[in-house]
Length: 299
Ligand code: GDP
Image (cartoon, rainbow, N blue to C red):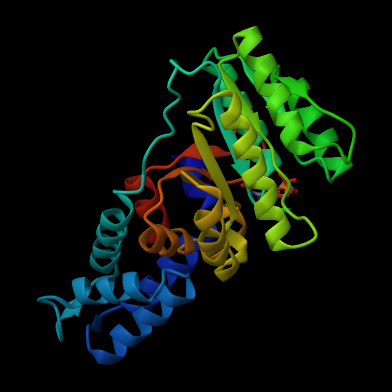
C-alpha cells in the first residue's frame, strides 16, 4: 500500500491538493463544481467518469457547505465503482503447461520491464518460467530479456536479430512443453514498418502458437504507458481489435499526475486490468486493486 500510495503520489497530490485548496470552507455551488470538474479532467479521468463524480458529489449537497474530505470520499467511491468490474487478477491456470502469455505493446511502453517483473513474481510463487525473445527487430530487446532471465532465473529462448518471431515462438512453446515449464511469456515487437505490419506479425505469432496448442495463448496482455495519455487510449482500440487482448497492464503510473487515464480506459474498454507499474525496479508491479487505486488517487 505504501509503495502504491508513493507511486501514485503525483496524481494524488494533483487531485487531492486541488480538492483541499478548492473546498476550504466553500459552498458547493456551480463555480465550485466547475473547478472540481477541471481538476478531474486535468487528471485524465475522462468526461463520462468526471460527469458521474460531479453528479454524485452534488447529489443532496448542492449549495451547501462541503469539506474536502467529503468530496474525496465520494470521488474514491465513484472511482472504485468504475474500476471494480475490471480489477481482475491474472489467474495462471496450472492445467496448461505451459500457460502461455503473449506480451503486447508499443516500444517504450515498459513491456520488457513488465516481463521481468512478472518473471520475478512467478518465480517467487515457485513456478518455472521461460521467456521467448520475440521482439526480434531490436538487438537491445533481445539482450534486455536475457538480462531479466539471468536476474530472475527464467530460461530465455532467443535467436539473432532479424529472425522470424513466429518461428521462435513455436520453438519456445515446443521446448517449454518438453521441459514441463509452468509459464511461457512471449515478447513481441512494438514497432514494425507500419501498423498493418505489426498486426500481421502478431496475428502470425498467434496462428503459429495455436497450431501447437489450440487454446494458446492463454492470455494476451497489452502493456500501456500511463504517461502517454490519449495515445494509450488509442492503443487499446487498435490492439484490442486485432490482437485479441485479454487484459491490461498499465506502467509508469509513478511518472504522471494524470493517472486518471487508467479509469478512463477501464470505463471505456471494459478490459480487465491485472497489474500496474509504479516504478522501474523489479518489485514495482502491483496487482491491481480497485479500492486501493481509488483511495490512492483521491489523495
Ligand atoms: P519496452 O520497449 O516496451 O520493452 O519498454 P522497456 O521495458 O524497455 O521500458 C522503457 C522504459 O520505461 C525503461 O527505462 C523502464 O525502466 C521504464 N519503465 C517501465 N515500467 C516502468 C514503471 O512502472 N515506472 C517507471 N517510472 N518506469 C518504468
